[in-house]
Image 1: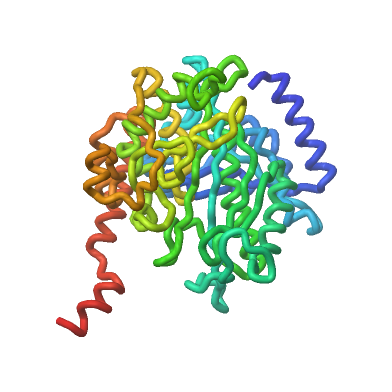
Image 2: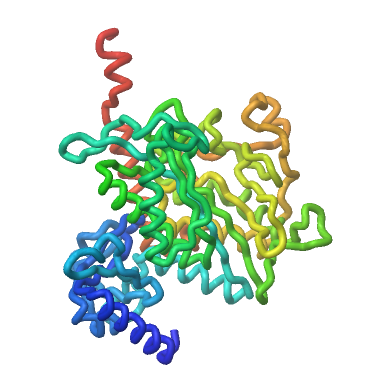
Length: 448
């Protein structure tokens, strides 16, 4: 970022702070799992913040620093400045920055997942590509008890695309839309999803880092607005048995010299050789990065047949039962959609591993297997075997084992994040494995 641009942007921010009477600035960043954190400072400290002088204790943040190396600093991204729309009616307003984390010497902290994505973007740029991402994050709205804790009762019983009066979340989505728009988002669609109490609000695609920042902001705003309605918004992949879970479909394109590198007007399906190589990279590496895109024990309760979520490794130009789909739009809108990620994933790591897997395919000149245009969910196991259709990992344990067996995880995440992430996920699986669950009590206690 040039000093001229920084000065111009900073002056613009100062004007907004004065005009909106902003007194508090939330310096936001994410931990290893993508959970939003923040340190709040006064607007009078803006200059110190821009100069990267705001320090915090990294030893208490999941996946960050040991206690003997705990001093870390926040470097705000001036492009992420936004006044919080729910604060403007108070006597003073609040604003936020999303930040990268740095070491005391000013270098990028290797445990910051935002920095992991930055490195991936830089690697793509070295090969002449910029990365465009359009994520689609679904969520549930649940009722809460008198203490504000979430219940298992969904906010409504409506279905796909249903309007009011069945869609009780319409008003909530409207307020989410207004908040996001005030924070600079361009909203493209909003609707009730397939499952009871499930919703989706789509925002415009952006470069990879901005898209990850927007995904993080989106989840925060959705939860904040839902709370104002006395509801709990959940991005848990499969919160209710027997109905669809929530996905985070990731649409990605590579651009080169201002042109979409995935588009070839004269090719079959109008997909370029680069697009096919990108698909080949995803197919080859997806089992090895599933632990990142689907990070929870619960993630693998969603990736089962019968609920629209993909669990078989195949691609198609239209088939929604396939793991990878090519949406119909072409030209600058040509993109590859990966349908397995879920919204509990850290978007910075998710976009990094997907883009890197695609770059791996391009570097190796991979050719994907033939597309599958039939309904994979209704194929027999024998038919899938005959057609060479493999499956995604069936549990977090299997996914972590695949992450360790592959090369993408360690190369993309870096030693610090990779080691911390694997240790965290192994501990999560072990905690789940040794716990006694309600299903076991219901099925075994009386019988045995």
